[in-house]
Amino acid sequence: MTTDEYIDAHIDPEDPYLYNLWRATNLHTIHGRMASGHLQGRWLKMVVQMLRPRNVLEVGTFSGYSAICMAQGLEEGGKVWTFEINDEMEDFTRPWIEQSAVASKIDFRIGDANVEAPKLGVVFDMVFIDGDKRTYLQTYEMALGVLRPGGFILADNTLWDGHVVDPAYANDHQTQGIAAFNDFVARDRRVEKVILPLRDGLTIIRKKQE
Image (tube, rainbow, N blue to C red; front, side, top):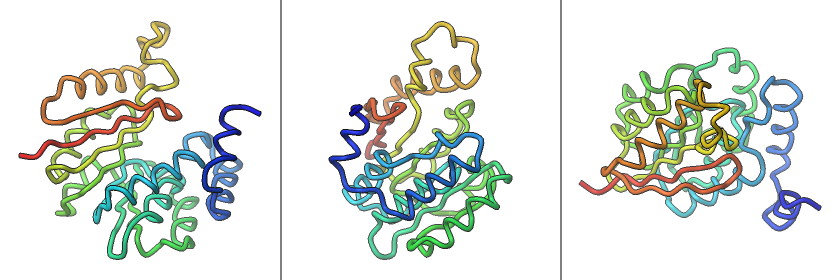
């Protein structure tokens, strides 16, 4: 038994709907491993239950797995706005979101969150960043602008499969984007931050009170 298998056997079981979504994502999309999956999905749900946000912004919907997990953790009246910039994902993702038990808590939009999210006029309590790694810094600044003081940003893939410390990937644009983001956030006095080695690296960032 691997460590991952051991973990899966000792946490809450994967929702059957989410399991089917995970399987369909891996069967019918090119980059199936991008979906959050069982461990991260249960973690996201529990974080939402702990922080109790009313308004959540997600940058990078992909197949909808993480959006559904976060929506499962929301209290009554809570909502997840999730943006996917790749319009080719809409035909796959929208039915999975709309047929889920938490569809009423999810607003799924195709478009660039960096441009469109500020237009919503919503003050967010939590932002989950899992979009284009090359533009993480721009997304971070956008997120800070729509986040309430004391709110949280969760940034996924911040260890990038170890590439951020591997010189062989120094010229890779996505690795450069993640590394620049990590370096900037480390120096940013507007926030508190910690990186967790969960899955592919996840940074928890808290916007300081003004």
